Length: 150
Image 1 (tube, rainbow, N blue to C red):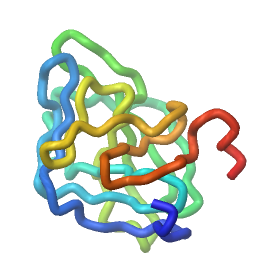
Image 2 (tube, rainbow, N blue to C red):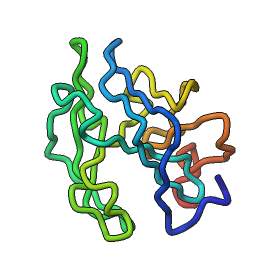
Image 3 (cartoon, rainbow, N blue to C red):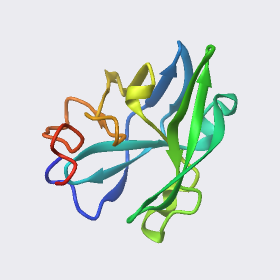
């Protein structure tokens, strides 16, 4: 992960990606993309056609990434549970990330399960960043105490 590039790059995942909230699979794809960036575990982006549309509600929250552009946030709902601003997307990303248009990324720490292949991912430390940590990703990662200024 320390050999991931900066600025970040976009890559296909090559394995199934699945997201579960309250026992309900809200996203399931073999077409996910991941963003690879120095000091971060990957963020996984799911195509909108592979997400249960009833599980997403647009939020008013916005943020800006110097590399990808303006992000919008989504509330994720399933099985009677509601997680506000628990996912994000780039409706009109910068040219280098245009393949991400309308794909949705989920905060692993806000979902019950986030899977890459047959491995259950754990959230990037700290809750601010949205990376998914799997056994093939070696830290330390941005997000833990004292790491925000790296």
